[in-house]
Picture (cartoon, rainbow, N blue to C red):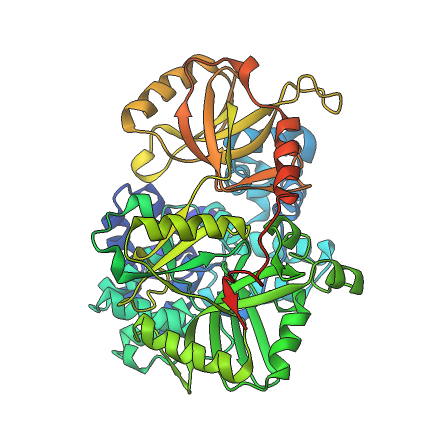
Length: 580
């Protein structure tokens, strides 16, 4: 009897190990219907025998190797995994692995296929029915080591005890992001609710205040969701805004307006001498902004959680977001950086105070408490404006632009803090930061409702007369929507005609299909060939009338970026958008 047969026999009995979880994940990936995916995972969760297995299964599927609130990261990049896999399979990384990855379009898919087909890799593996807890211990081992050699040793030892499908999802869990199976955290929440017959909103609320999808699953199983407790210094899901043009608004007077600051959304948790700052993607960014930490420590505040914006602020003026970028990612900024790009946190909402969360308090109630704290501790706080019609919105919008801000936020007076939701309670009024005519360089296969079509596109700008480059076009961003179904059909027909290369789910195209895109802003990004990326690019129009010779150039991008930096801004000592 061979090794594979032994493993297959072990699976005949219901065995809730890591292999079983990976097979369920694979089934979910192959299921088109969202409800079908939720049903499959709910049935699996319901059958899990122990609370620990339930916790880990939910965590691995929704969050990856570590809980978001743990602050842990494995730091095993795709290159580390790829090099380790090439050595494990005894193949040349450049000559064999990289072409295979190009063909599949995915490093983890490539590794799975190699493990299935390379004799040397098959011979080295004896599947060991690893439990979820054993895999959790392996993730901790990877977290504890720093050298590539140590990480590679652990990976080899682990893979020798896994099947190919386990190896694929083990690698994806290490990335701490989506498993790329069309099943995100909200679907895991729905599956937990279905598995244990709970209201989805109750499960979502417990997950939000505990910060742990695994703990939430266990609470749901034992009918203890009402025992979920908020824990200070773990990030909460942010309330989101919808574009005003995507929502019909009948009674605009029921909203108040605030300027939408040209900064970075952040959440500040503070209790006396302890301060933590979290970004919109729930990462701890405290060390990057020591002056904000000092600001709050000086005020000796009680336990409080603020929602607001970090802005570069100098000479009574909010400076461009591009300057804030020079602070982002620097874990310990030096004196020169701190002096050149000083930052300020402007609070515009309150989530926790007086020992309790206040999400269910309506906006005026939260605002009253925020203003009370602001007055007592002298905190920068957004200014709110009453509005009665479109004329008010137009006036305040233009005023916000003169401040250099992005536009307006309209907030419904009766709204609660709808964490993680994007509804009509908050609306954003913005205008595009600009637009470019670009050429489609690559087409990527869509997923979900867009499955079977090419709906995601890498867009390029012209550098054919730029002495810094040998290519004719280089990427400037990606666009994922903005077209009708009929337009998408025409695009896909043209994509077929222009395809010259295939990289798994990605097609390389002859650069002839021109589209106009609009975007919110231009950002410096030295990791890209262009040196810039576009913030929130989206398709504005398919320019069937234009050819590749009409595409905008990198020099146009650079010129627009400089113009934005040099734009004159209204100072806060005249018509302020926030107050101390």
